[in-house]
Length: 475
Image 1 (cartoon, rainbow, N blue to C red):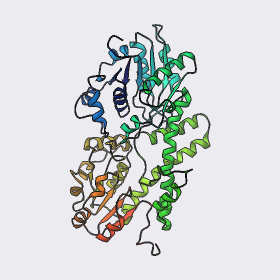
Image 2 (cartoon, rainbow, N blue to C red):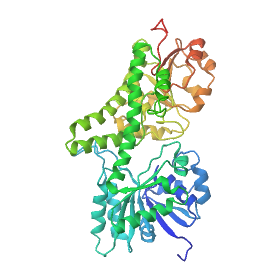
Image 3 (cartoon, rainbow, N blue to C red):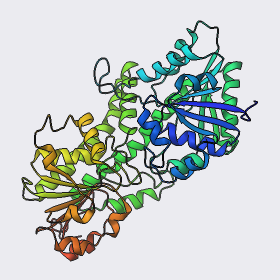
Image 4 (cartoon, rainbow, N blue to C red):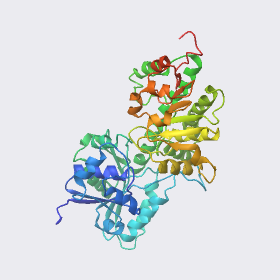
């Protein structure tokens, strides 16, 4: 090409997936021009500034290296579609809130709108890549929309699901376990898939780039997240049994994880999983099973969600029951609001549900998280829990966002660690204990603290899956 680029890529959607993925492609492929487009001017302005719209370790350095050279962010959607050889669709596919399949099915409206825009604007043949997590056979709908163009253009539709973990997205992209590309098994489809393979082959070994048919690729993403979430719910179910019997879930995890057939990963008990993917994808899988008449399969996977909800509720109830069955008017410090460390993402965060439960018990909540803004906290609370100042007058006054952990804990009756931020392990707990109301309670929802050390200071400590020495005398 006369401009020096071998391939031009347009990514529709400047969110958690599109932004980092395209930044790494640009960094690894200097002969590829990459432009991320979005309708949201504020989002694009943030990508073009030093203050990126998402927090992800390593991302600013990657963006700074390429931005303005072969990585661009723009609201000129039509212009970038026309110029592109490959178009990624990386838009939100939330769970439907009403209509058929509400509460389970994914809403793929945004994917269809992207396909219609591509069909309307394009002036040449394109490769269109599903990057969004979608129900199996969504590509068929995208393909039908694209085929209805009246210009005689040919579009090849591929599936290229992402397997990123927030907080480690950049390492995941730099050294992926695998890259999955699904396409129609026709000469044209196979050629399109190989074009995308050639992009990833700039840094990913060929043996780690898997090519499949479209439907296997689409379903693989749902299954991968379902299996990971299943492990979390499995160990969390055992954590409840441990607390009832005096067993220690960490010892169980170590014993079980040493079996090579099982492995050690995703066996850390906690207050439950969160984030944008696990629950949404499992509910999508449940709905797919129901749609195809696989009732028992649907019930099996739905139990993963049931257990996750149980774990969050169990934690809230443990807090209330331990504090003399009332938290009304008591200050409670919440350390961590993001759904995991090293991210500012609050979507489906377990912390939100614990805060909601405590607010309903009329506690005075003080939240500290190093990366979560009050605006984001309230936005997700309103969207997911329908909890706002309008629906619950007095909510704003009941929940304070603190500037640091010590301010949150000052005068508190209890503190709850709900996100595993490393900085919480390094806090001066003797200082915290001195300034808390007594008895001072610690509820460790991530099992990251030194429980024996805290008890020696005077704290009453309750942790996920750990025996309570006040309950068992034979530990």
